[in-house]
Length: 222
Image (cartoon, rainbow, N blue to C red):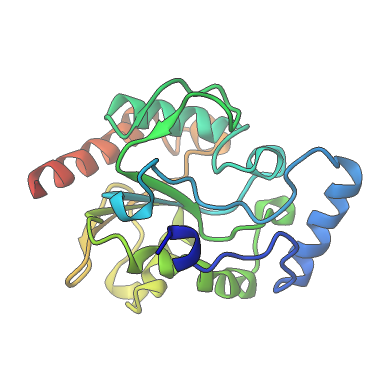
């Protein structure tokens, strides 16, 4: 059975979250050539079943993934993320910040905790909870999954809840690895946003350290 059939996906005009639905509708009016819909996961060519690394972001940026239709494509966060994935062998090709570039993921999948762009990049707790129905199945299927990297505290907490675990037992801390019983290692990271890098909350070496650790865990697992 194909990944598209096995994994539930929101419809292009999903209205589970009225505020997000209306916000996207307003951007369809302003920029009709943009993607302006729930952004699907970015998967390796072989599909989700081949993923050893799963990266969880927060939500599409209004002029990034909401415009292009591919996670972390079209804004600064993607520049840092994809250059890092290329450095550590999690991607091949060339990232040109457009969905038809030559970039391909290797044993890696990327998805946002919230599929639709939120106003001011701030989804509400209810919107995060509602969209978890599309996040949770991402963890169910890849038998090869070894590492989950969560970008930011919201993505981290939503991931922990998707696994049915308690936040207090799996706190967010940059670079901290934690093993899910019978599952992958979760490594939390500060989000690779321009704000975090401009303020020094996250540096390129700090971000590289997260994916160096992910690479080590995956390679040691064979």
